[in-house]
Image (cartoon, rainbow, N blue to C red; front, side):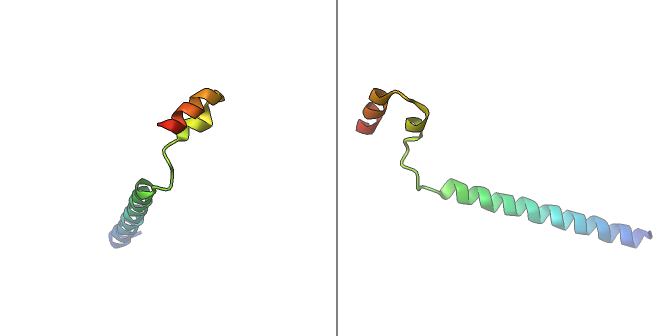
Length: 58
């Protein structure tokens, strides 16, 4: 390979890596903006029904 081909390969690898990072950032932003939950994730983790009833009142 010539030096010119090596530079082209390096630039393509950099561009591909940069695109992947930008894609992951966009996906993370979408996850952060997701407000569909009602904030009661603890209800799913406890079998204690009285604790769940108390959480519903908060």
